[in-house]
Image 1: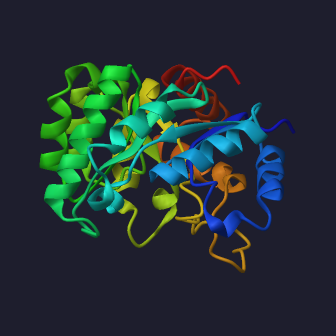
Image 2 (image 1 turned 90 degrees about the vertical axis):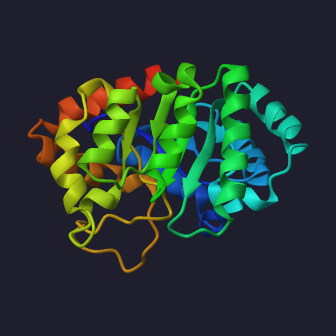
Image 3 (image 1 turned 90 degrees about the horizontal axis):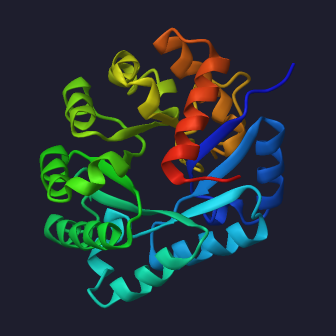
Length: 266
């Protein structure tokens, strides 16, 4: 049986948990039908490393470049020049991962807002789409994003974990939505399972967020807890079931969305 061609729009492939078997991880992903992956940049150094990986696997990988809200406290105005250089690399297809996270507050909220604002302005200036993170900061997040209306239809909220009201706010504003293995979590994913059917066909994309969020629906369950792109079909199946769509149809439309959103030629 031919596997559906899938695109993982968010995997932290530079994470050190992949250091010993990264080539095998990529090979397993291809064997599972994953034809392209977007490597997430979460710090300046990590974004540079993501681009190095893209140059090693240019037929499969592209990258984002940005500073995650957890690392906002270390982001200085002077770092914008470094980020602009990363944006200029042809392998960079989006700005991010950037946004707000008041759940962990590893960086003070004021520092998060400052770094997020700088990155939104820089992305708008450079004409890049944005790969966004938001957790328990919905009101501030949407208010800041609306200050850059040219980005609203060029933004994807990755790893959506909010409720139906938050989802509707995002959809009305024009955002695309990334869905991870959170939907496979019987403890935390019920709200997402109920809401995922509201996402229009042309604004839905799939991602693993590996090595995080290993799908809990995998059978047999792996002995480890590390997620990787080979498990993207499990997320596809869960989303397809919740939306009442054939999995092959959903694979085709989410991959088409990813190609269009990120301008992929892979």
